Length: 229
Image (tube, rainbow, N blue to C red; front, side, top):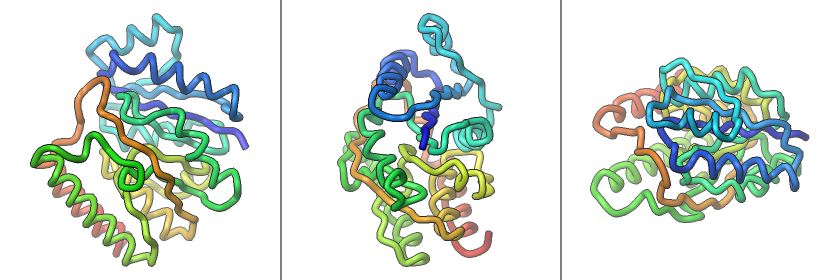
């Protein structure tokens, strides 16, 4: 099975080049078919880094990370899609472990778990505390609804079979797509899995999530996909 890495970027000029090069180096140890870079209309010089390194990229439609993920799913060619952020919070060296349960025929969708692998970004201030508690509540709801025991429903670092991803009918335009993907994977009868991955302090850019602005959408989409759609 071949893999496509989708590198999601927005204003991450200080880290994107390093992450891309580390992803490219994986060709030596896995069947990497392509790296698809999807940029969220960066204005900080990120696109200049692409040009300096000869990196081909596509621009998203400006609606958010979820929309960019849906755009990538429609274009990639590998049998397995790996999603990784370009801010340095995810380590490309973890990708072979992330896709192994899929290659072994055990799972269709595997997320990296910060609860198992640790995080430099989940603790330390009130905003992070609120995000962690909210994530735990959402994950608990998913677990009891579907009889699973996941630990992290919000990590963007994940791998999924392309065929499965294309059958989920994803709708979310923002980061709520992370929980939508898991819920719809389980509803469709696909197999979910987790591996421990560490979340590092971001090397570039700033968090795109504003809790006061997005929490209503998180609650709405969580309940909607759990019980209705």
